[in-house]
Image 1 (cartoon, rainbow, N blue to C red):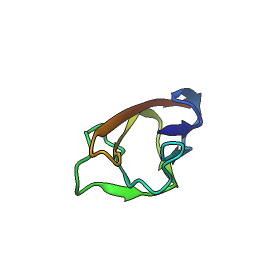
Image 2 (image 1 turned 60 degrees about the vertical axis):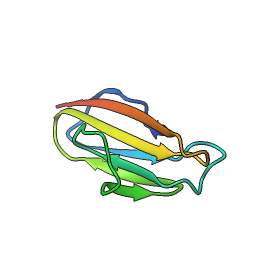
Image 3 (image 1 turned 135 degrees about the vertical axis):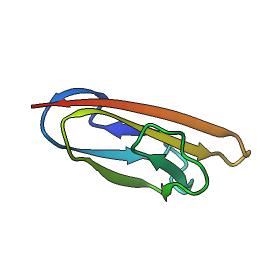
Image 4 (image 1 turned 45 degrees about the horizontal axis):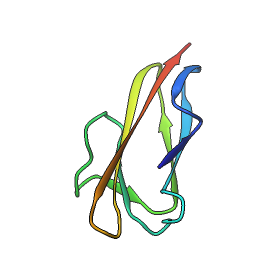
Length: 84
């Protein structure tokens, strides 16, 4: 999993973050949440890439989960801080 821009602190009131599926596995369904909770089977999902809008200043945590071809779960956390 990758996120662009890189997680970190940004001087902005909103930020568009693009999440990308693991390299070499663009068909894997990635589930994600923007509230910092661990996504489950009911969470929003994408294949390839998706753009998520962080719409207000403050701390934000995007969490992702992907299940590989062997059935193993992999998790990533991407923390962002937006400040005006």
